Image (cartoon, rainbow, N blue to C red; front, side, top):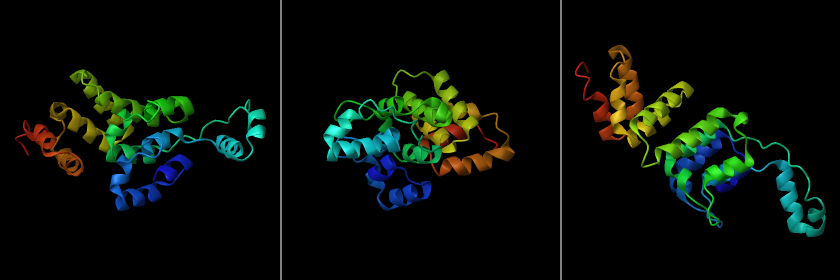
Length: 201
């Protein structure tokens, strides 16, 4: 899983790996990195070639040390969201050098490549802040809704179950579909907070 994350992989392959080895998303490699670390690293081809050269011919690699690496190939939204859905706490984990996946992202990627990817990484990190207030949590929910990341909405509700009550204005005709979607991802407490004030259902 870590190899595929670092070297680029399709959503289908990632899904297969996570289905076959669900615990792999929480494992660390020999550098203390989670799969999310490796995905946020996502080295460019130029970097990979340089690193390979460094292993084989250190002298040549040193001479090429000033080479400007090409723009990073940003990991896809689907793959990033897949890892976060399986292990949202990964955003807070530090490798052996004290770096989180966000640190890797800031070093190797640029937000303009895909603002949605940056948004979900930063917002899931925000949800782990014990000082996060209700209004900010609601803002994160709205941002996930605008992106269309419903699994992220479910995660936000699980972190802040009371925010689910903010959906009390949703029409009953649309609520069944929403409950069906959230029921596959949210815990019981979150679902209870969603329906507690909706006696119409």
